Amino acid sequence: MPASSFDIRVCLSCNLRYPLTEGHSFGVRCPHCLGETRVVLKKVISEQGQARRKRKKGKLRVVLLDNIRSAWNVGSILRSADGFGFSHAHLCGITPTPDLDAVRKTALGAEEFVTWSYHHDSVNLVLELKKEGWTILALEDDQRAIAVSKGRRIKAEKTALIVGSEITGVDPELLDLADHILYIPMRGQKRSFNVANAFSIAAYALGG
Image 1: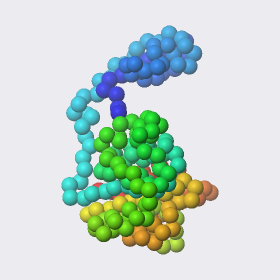
Image 2: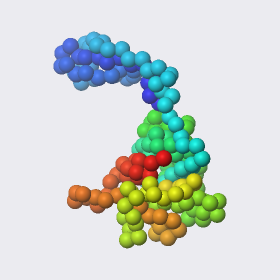
Image 3: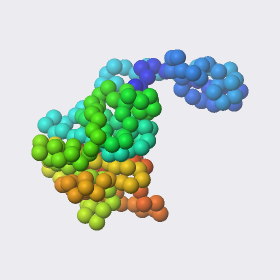
Image 4: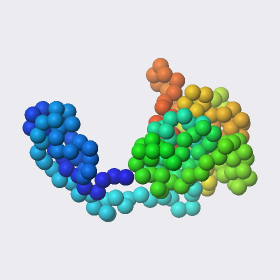
């Protein structure tokens, strides 16, 4: 979670400027050259400044992570999910959960605000979500996909956004079950973004 207060320190030897929170392993010695440092700024974040998260009433959004390998990617997605107003994360297959330190370290406390559940089989889960009236969106480069920028036009009160394996992408059966498949246009030579970055792009494009 974000620090409520911190110092900005500058090294007297190499001029490295860095933030220091209470109890951080850096200490008051420069983390680069171990030289002495001085405080140049003290920052206190008010409770009002920390309480700006708002969710659209009446609309529910959840994310489904299917066979994400990296705990760091999962933690990053949880943090972004909180920022974009997603209320829950379905973690499926081999996706690591916040029970792991690596997930919590990257999530920075977001797992306290985005509830989560674990499921062995994502296909069975999506079948249940569809019965409950959820609109299923899948993020994948597919012939049936529409540009993610058009996702804002999708009218639904309850949406579940699926992101899949860093290597194999979204399970083909999940794509067949999806109400809409979204893709992110690529302008360079690479064919895909990091899955955590891709989720953030899609979540932002879908808007409120």
